[in-house]
Length: 422
Image 1 (cartoon, rainbow, N blue to C red):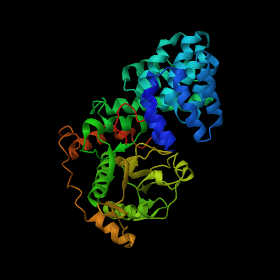
Image 2: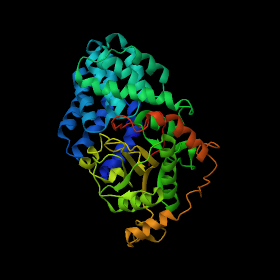
Image 3: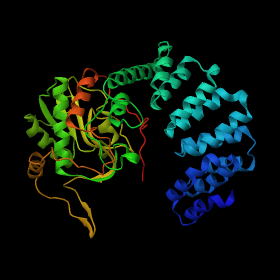
Image 4: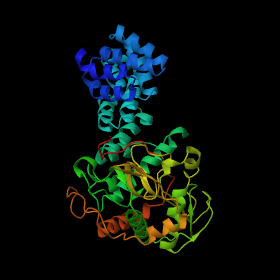
């Protein structure tokens, strides 16, 4: 096994900790827990995680000690490398079945952090006799739904009593809303492993305006890197207009979140939708709040949008799907991992081009006058007809009664639809 870790050690020796962690990730589930801990220890030391480094040393020295492996796994989760916790905690379950209830809780947390919801569901069902309704049976329903197993999620949720502890009331409400939205989406969408728009609505309540037509086999409608365009900005606002029409809802004003790009997009939205632009107030009812990228704003700004004012719509153009924010938008034009605004610095063969310094009003006019109907034909990998105007309108009409309802609840998982990251 030692030679397998050569890349991890090489990156560590050069001081490239992120690359070392990336090299370690695919090895974790096949390595013996003690050997894995021996590799995690030096990484933890290098970044100053002294508690994890000490726990890793102990687990490496005594790989048959359940408490040492548990401590190691727990700290791996705490320090953001949950993938390394999974094999350690599974070994604890094998070595000390009498502690299954406590260990199972941490193992499920580790699997959830890694978006491995199907495995979390399997582990929970394997120990179902130990599970109380809250949180145990709830976690079965929740993870089954995030794994795309709607039938199991519905069956387990149907048997859940209302929680006695108010701590779990929010989770009960969130799960109920997710299942209701999944039922609505299933009227017109397959809710399979490639249905990004359907699952985005089911899990977060977000209407996804457009799908990427590139590399569908590995990206399933998301973008990796996208250098944005005025046409895409216009198309997103046109799709928003179609969604508002399907829902029979018309905001009475537009306001921009506090950022230059937000302001540019809000000016364009106001003109396209024929609405007045007003100063930003997160509590103002009946307003279309416009953000270019919510993740560009700090958590305080985002947290202030968690509870929707009556009639309010939160629009985001480019959602960073690898780093979801504190709140999901009510409408998102597209999902990408990285990219730039059409008016921002552009990556070119000869370096970075300068950002557009024109007044916001002039740039907004470029969005308004762009041809939003001009779509990117892509590479032919996307399913035919998946992102036509007709398909979007049909979906928006089907889910309209449940759109813009309930709180904006954050979800860190990408759900059943997976995409490659870089």
